[in-house]
Length: 601
Image (cartoon, rainbow, N blue to C red; front, side, top):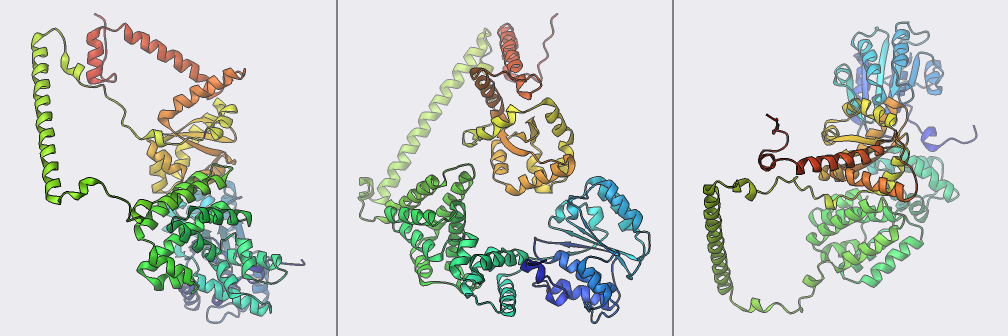
């Protein structure tokens, strides 16, 4: 092979090479030295933090005949075979593609046999959370009573999806995100070893873009080297990561704070014309605003997180902007970020955002603006006037209540009508501010075009199993939801409460978890479209009308075919209500339809 990626060439081969996980590597080395090995380990943590590498090093160390102080020699036949992946006694399994019961049963059966070359037979199961419920049950018995010569090492990025019965039978090690300083030091070591010149600021950009993953950092560094012909420069790092320079962010926010709309819009144009991603620009702005708030409270914390790169423009901006103004900016930025996910014209949203941020608090920033005349009065006179007005309003309301009460009593004494239920308004559904719940019809209609009863039935049959695979927080959010239409490529899910619909629509982690669950259960991943339950009948009816207007027929097997039937049922119910006696209507209005049972004598 001519070229290998940096993260493969520089993969750790000893515990001392694992970056940022000193507690874990020390514990494992001591366990090897004292021969206090467990039969099963669980390595959990974010991607690119050294879980699989540590598993391979552990497999080498416990089988290496020349191991010293818990470290493998990496020179003997067994160490080289494990490094190359050719030793039959160390088996790596990808649970994402081997997640069935049969695969785990095969592991359980083969684990009984003694190792051929090594001292221990080691099973490394990567992404173990992808195993099905049946596969976990098949693995459980082996973990409970394993053979003496077998060690299991489970690796996962989502430990909350692993059953508690499995976790209770393993030693768990939580790998943490690697700090930017550690990532920076590792990249400097690699580039110095390869004798490649680099810009310190470029490596700091890469270290921050990696978000705690060493593998991600080396992959980005690989791209920068390819982009710049083995030259690591600050401009190349910004181009590859899509980041925006600190100077442009400072300039933009300074114009916004000073209400200079024209120059702020010009900054946006400059950013877009240079090829920067609009969503990444908004994300960088949110992070920059966060740094402003933190710097106003603890400058040392920001200097540490920014690796000492703090320019004078940033310091000046933190001294002139008010914290409350920054809070409002973050809220507006977050709203725009959510809206930009569904648009093909992000520049429009950026322009609107810029105008909104620049004009915010402009009245408060202009002390020369004339104040209302009422402020010329003394504070005591204003207070007295307000108190007198409130007293008059209270007296007027009390008088109206007394009159209404008297009229209600006189009407009841007449015995001709039941006025109390008539005065009570009919029970209304609690408002969930559904008007604010935005539904993307461009995603719903394609699902309805291909929706079938069979696809919906398949989703409904596994819905409980799908929710059981979520963590407690996500399961609580999805408990008030149900699938209402489905095709092979999409599922429409309705939420009983609009505010939960809005929360689920912006939770990418929830949607990824649902997709992973469906892939594990049904072996395909449809797109999820969320809607409020109270809007579903209108959406369904609108779809039927659109189909009829376009001359298309609604397929009988589709879930949408029930729209016309539901409309007919509504008409029948309305006709039935018109024929009901008056006393039945009043009783229904008072007690509700669920309690009333009308019988003819």
